[in-house]
Amino acid sequence: MDYRKLFLVEAGKRLKLAKMDPGYCGKHVSEKQSKAETEKYCGKLNKLQYLLYAEARQSLLIVLQAMDAGGKDGTVAHAMSTMNPIGTVVTSFKQPTTEDLKHDFLWRVHSHVPAKGMVSVFNRSHYEDVLVVRVHNLVPKDIWATRYSAINDFEKLLWRQNGTRIIKFFLYISKEEQLKRFAARLEDPARNWKISEDDYREREFWDDYMKAYEAVFRKTSTEHAPWYIIPANHKWFRNLAISQIVAETFEDMGIRTPKPQVDLELIKRQYHEAEEQEVTAKPKLARDGKLKMKK
Ligand code: AMP
Ligand code: MG
Image (cartoon, rainbow, N blue to C red):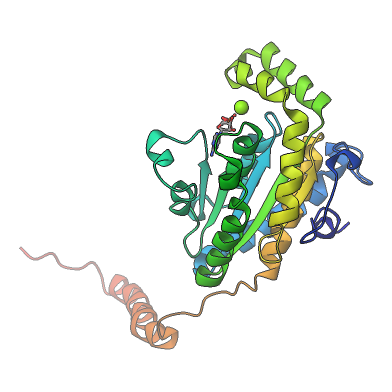
């Protein structure tokens, strides 16, 4: 199945999240059954990411958005564990600091976009400025309403000026699944730290968030920076779909093994052939007896 086609939000398309199934897993039935396929994509992803790093000509930005307990951290762990850390950076965007709030909303984001050769993952992102900010009226409507086009311009700039491909994932879980995950966090001492009262308070605004997300998809899914809505109730299916989409995006980028910067033949002649002569000379020395030590 081509998940890049199936889960893509077409530019300008109006969609209703309520009509989509967060529990979808296609023909797959379990983690065990889908493991080989996921591993195939992870292998591809690993090879191409390292090549992207070596090529150092373009970059990839992966944006992750979800409701609380939607699986952002788990996705980061899965996707990143398949990549070479030398070419990756993860940035988590929390509530803006006082200093951030003294600037335009993209100020804190811009310095974290990927340099050539790198993959950056945004764990939450500039989209919070049209999600939580819109839901809670943190700034007046005439301010947040103009942010969609500011975001599109910003993403276009990254693409045009620096060859940054952008893919944006919404990890879509159901409200019931969220409650189940909250309960699991309460039960498991190792995960107690992940739960907060805020999570329950935000849950009350579920429908407003869904509306805000729908507006985001309609206004900011573009050809060079598409949104994908990933059914994410099943963590293993989410990992399968995302690894396929990332691997195939890499494939599309035309990443090439970089050409050597030096004359390989010359280096071979100068260093390796000289070394070979040294090596063949050694047994002769050994035959002729031990080297006499200078007194
Ligand atoms: P978490 O990801 O659960 O650690 O929480 C981070 C919190 O920061 C979430 O509640 C986000 O909604 C909030 N947050 C992130 N970016 C912004 C923003 N630009 N404005 C307001 N709140 C934000
Ligand atoms: Mg939270």
